[in-house]
Length: 354
Image 1 (cartoon, one colour):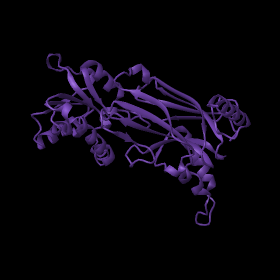
Image 2 (cartoon, one colour):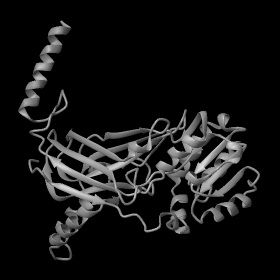
Image 3 (cartoon, helix red, strand yellow):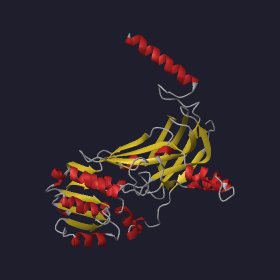
Image 4 (cartoon, one colour):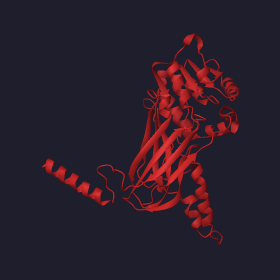
């Protein structure tokens, strides 16, 4: 691929009323039906069961209270289920129906406005704050505020680490599909128009492992014990990536992984992991680029908060010229300069090894 300067501007518009949108039971049905999500949190909570017994937990953005109730089942002495939207009333009824009202207290409040009795601290914070491509509409700022205001020294955060992953990909179900014989008609123009329209908004879809054109790359990692809200204002990634298969470079696939404390494991939303309601996020290129194995592609990806809504990120993906960008050393790509550098490195290693 040698076409340069292609720029994709993308955004995902949040609902007009963020908290109002979470009063829709269908939204919570979607999340409760996500068994990979629930199983990951249950495993993580059970993994620190010995720590939780007799302790105080805060669930930030509790929704229906499912995570709060799992913490109560694990032996927590007290769980504050903090939920700003009207779904808090449903959570209260579910807690009562499960005979857990003596442990779980539902508080309808923004965590930023919350006060605990007598300045009480909590021993653990649990939250399912992640959005599409990790950050879209996320409650991460609220989790960090809760950490700074309420978490006791030595306390745990579930999850404790979040990683944003990227990989160049093909999107055959949105491209080559229309090049096939469609009832005896050619609808390739429709495919081109659809691809062009996708340039204004990320595509939430299922990307298959065989659609990935390279090894997945970690482009951002966040330690929730140390992160600051300002760290979330702008994420920038500029790199050259070696492709490991031929195909059509049609987009950049994004997903996230979250790691839990101790032996709590990892929740992955990648193409090879069990499907979640987050699926994957594809930044669709305005045109298709045929590529070969051991060729390189280069990009600059910027995720920046909107000045109008901190839950809203503007995404800009710019394709760069891999011939002019510095490659990692060593690099196994087909470029002659990288082959030459590889020979020099190999000769140097042989000389000094002997």
